[in-house]
Image (cartoon, rainbow, N blue to C red; front, side):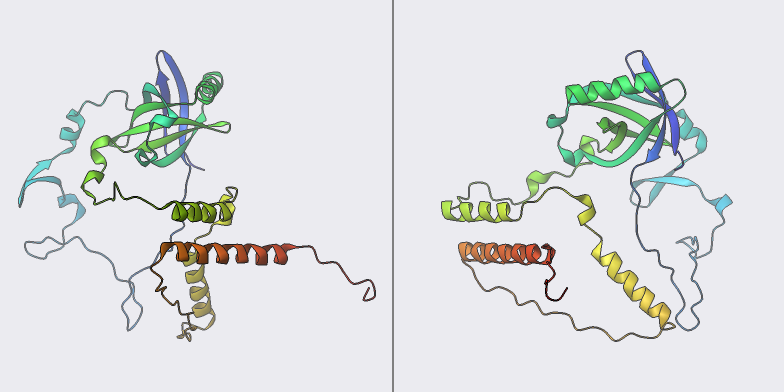
Length: 278
């Protein structure tokens, strides 16, 4: 892996040299736009709206639209005038209980690796966060943008997880959510039974991107066939349920789930060989 950023974690007078590595990767399939008649790749051009002419990179500037159709140009020196202190530091400002933070604030994790001379302080911070069940809330500048971030322990690693600032979250109070609607005891008990029957231990390897895998199968088939059209397989039709009674829907779901569990158990049960056949 290649470090995307190097600096240090700072809290109080403690300074820990670290390198930052991506903790996730995107498995998206990339497609090129092609001209249909000869499959020639189609490139994008930077075209000015005013006259439709292509604009070379050396004539492009950054502008902020302060009113509709009105722009102010910002140059490199303008960005440099913004005094962001400690640009190479993950500056921890507070330590907060994990349970106090709504998970919606977190959105992108990075691994932190201690650099030369930082092992002991790195271990100290990791162990303290784990023992106190707290998150270090920090500000960090990556490239030209400042981020809010949480420093968390994960097994033996410290993780830097970028966070949304409060003003970046949409106001959920504008949504029409049922507040005082009473749910019947029978419905609640059935729903709990359904949740219980579908409960399992967390196994991240169990879940896959079905769409990506199916699309790759289509791509491989088309490559093998020389790009010819492939006959579409008939899809199973889903009949929409006309049942309005919530309890009946829950009972049907529960029966189906229990049936699937029995099939799964039978499928994975050890098969004993017949002695006579042996």
